[in-house]
Length: 177
Image (cartoon, rainbow, N blue to C red; front, side, top):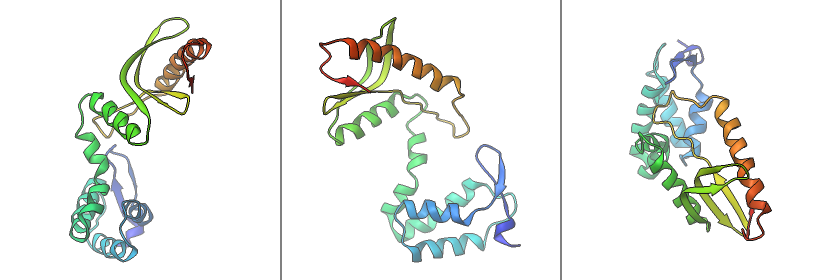
């Protein structure tokens, strides 16, 4: 059967056609060379079948990639490593804070900020070059989970309340974005 006609089952249980281009892009993103990518895709194409899960494709690609370069393989498995932080979002918030610190930000995790109307807890507060960033982290320990449209609307409303108070306070020393 032609690989372009293979239907795969995603983690969300959705079905879609196998995309060699998607697989190629994910392998390229982790640093694999074109020759390595061609070998991996060739081996996967030889073993795929209708209904194969994206998880099975991932495992096969990871296994082959690990033989070429363990560093590339670790980058390829980053999403799965993030899931291992769960089930709560707190370790994820600390990871985001640490990544921002590496980029020169001053950060705090789990900060309660005064808004114009009420107080709000912000997952990560990051400051650099006179600008403050209030960051809300959304972590799902299940790859099928999603945040519905209400979450960003609620987050934006909270942010606008905090921003109004922060930017109106001459003692803040930074501008909240």
